[in-house]
Image (cartoon, rainbow, N blue to C red; front, top):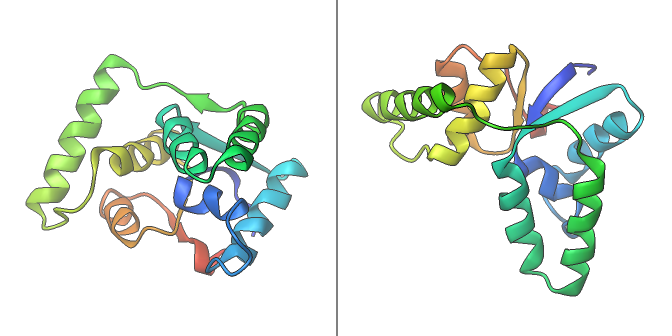
Length: 146
């Protein structure tokens, strides 16, 4: 599945670094291989580095080394503009009104970026996926990535 430009949630990217029995790791590694091969560009909001770094730092020294690899790997890191923050907050509040009360501001940022860039969102997070679909974003759940 060649998608060109995608937004990938840390729920997918972290699968690259977690133990081999991680669910849907094969699909996540397929995305990584396509990314490294230049077939796919992965856009990330800047908060992704905090989310990934926080999780990798918890696994000790090796996690810090892995995070250094992440920092070197990603060049398409996007920062929210002032008006975009407001849009993310409104989007999440609207989703809460629709019943998706567990959607976080963090996850709403990925939905916003994918919608703004008109590209697919790849995630392992069901709630984030539902929110993306409700916002008209093409969502690819990692288990369906082929």
